[in-house]
Length: 65
Image 1: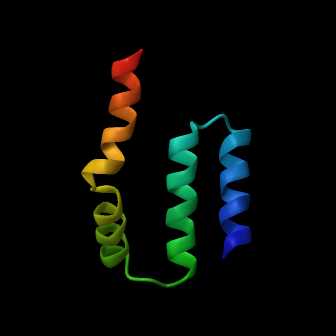
Image 2 (image 1 turned 45 degrees about the vertical axis):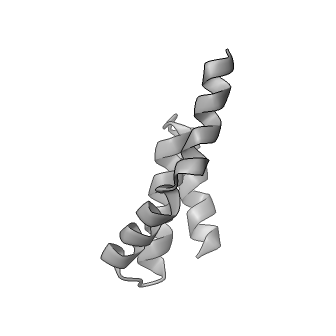
């Protein structure tokens, strides 16, 4: 699974796709290869990034500049 994710990310980099999109596409490929339920995976990804302290750190850095 990780080799397919790495290959997908490198392919996206070679095609000059942005870093965020390439990481997202390689994550989707990894989920599909692992035969995981896509709805549960997306819900868990959203819940893991939906935390205020993690969002506050970049805002403090941006406010200082």
